[in-house]
Length: 258
Image (cartoon, rainbow, N blue to C red; front, side, top):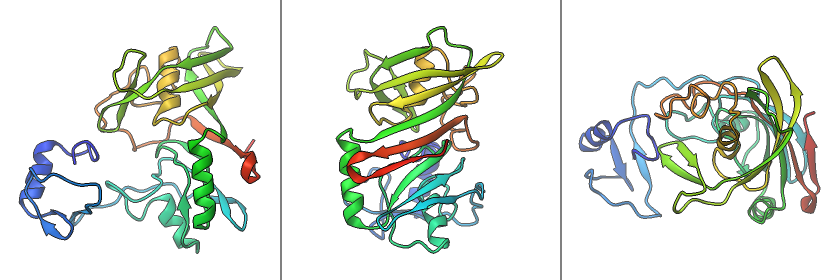
């Protein structure tokens, strides 16, 4: 629970489990209960006000097999943690779209294009394309400082550090390969607009690799110059990172918001 939902401490979760507010497969359990892959965990959380989210969800394109959706930030993709109704998938349901399936994810704090499948067959094909590296995505980020190199590739593995915080370093044992290509598009007084093309799809990859380069996203509360890696502030505000395009030649998907 502490790893999946780090916004509460270990003692808080232990207290909630012992008081019967957390149960597994509709049964009360003890804090030392070991979960299996098929277990369903329930958390009774009364009198909690769900955090608000922007009301800018927009369907940019509708195809018989999929939707291209603009997700504002901060907004999670699906229910979890403190969020239930205020998520992209639940909002799309309220807009009249049923039986949708997620093919890929954006961080809650990241804005931009999301490809949503309208049927199981397309979802399966799309997820295979993402897994096999057949999807081309590009992002735009505003970074702190002006990079000296206008084109840069960062090849640095990524691993979970704790909670929702990840780390990137060549020496991390058990880390997963991660590669991102960067190009400086425009320069400002003490910041720059950078195009980011991830070759792999690890959690927080662009944010970590920009920080690794020495030019973190200007308002990133976790990996920025004054970042706090406690996990407490991760979903409270949007950061200057936009998923601008998704291209899957194999499926005829090609969309950019620029």
